[in-house]
Image (spheres, rainbow, N blue to C red):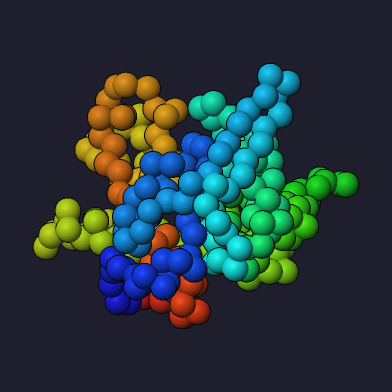
Length: 248
């Protein structure tokens, strides 16, 4: 990625037109994105009912606004991908009903993206059905990180789709660690004692790792600046070209 991901302090008029929401389970990353943008998360209400149904609605005015909803669709620790997907779709619908001019779904992890082709007779192509659901709910743009197959992702959605890469974040960190030493990229097992450090982003929290030697080696690099810069550029209709393809 050429250039620098920068912190943005928007003018007052721009703050009035941009709304950033983060649904339950992604609030921590959402707060980081908001800080990188120089704004605050918009207020919303989320309720769960005894029968397992739920309701989400914006509390801040969204009529005529450019709205971004951050929600990572990974499973656990409290909700399944299906629960999170349903909550996001309903919230997008509520935003459109409330008059939002444009709604962008920012999904650090996109569920069902790996089922992008048939591997058996009469197999589903689930990512295509997923795209249909988002478009039916009224989404205008979708953004995700490290999607399984970029071509399948882009072909599934008829609305604008943005497939970001974490490579610039990780490579920049690796270069700082390695300094002037040679770098060799391999793919060993993580239970291997030769591994001194594990580097990952916060697109999915590391809740599945129990306390122990693997977790102790983990170093988290936040993807918030990358998402914030993407939102800033989308809001101002600027190019994303250098964010989509890492350049040396």
